[in-house]
Amino acid sequence: MFPLYEQAAVAASQRQPKKLYHSITNSNSEQVTSTGSPTGALALASTMILCIFLNVLNFTAATSRQIFAFARDDGFPFRHWIARVNRKTGSPQNALVVVILFVVLIALIVLGSTVAFQAVISLGTLALASTYELSILCLVWRRVRGAGLPAHA
Image: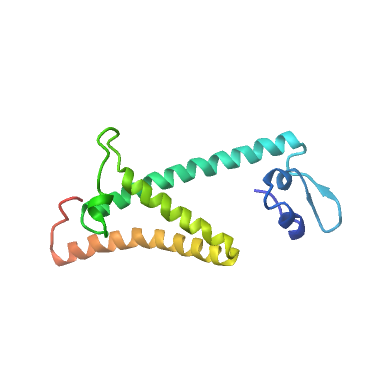
């Protein structure tokens, strides 16, 4: 999105994306601006934060639906509680609670060590890709063996 000239400038502004977008100092001590103004930097940072927020909402909803489906098919401990659907909204709210609690527990790791947090996030990305591969391989295996598809597929 933008060139990173000096790691110290980036490290100093990690908690403030607005400052990072507004200016980064390169090795020649010249001022390099990504947007040219604080207002532009705020608009760019706000757009980034909005995209991240919408992505988190999408990820949480998709994950809770996936957990609900696994619990419904007897694939999780406490499956009867997780697979319960709210009568008013028709949504699996207990599965959503499980997802949110898991995310909060993962987020607490950063209080201990940022390296450990990065390792867990990397493993999470690998696990997400592996779930897609596992689902496809299970269906291929059933096809090879001549068995039909599961009832809920």
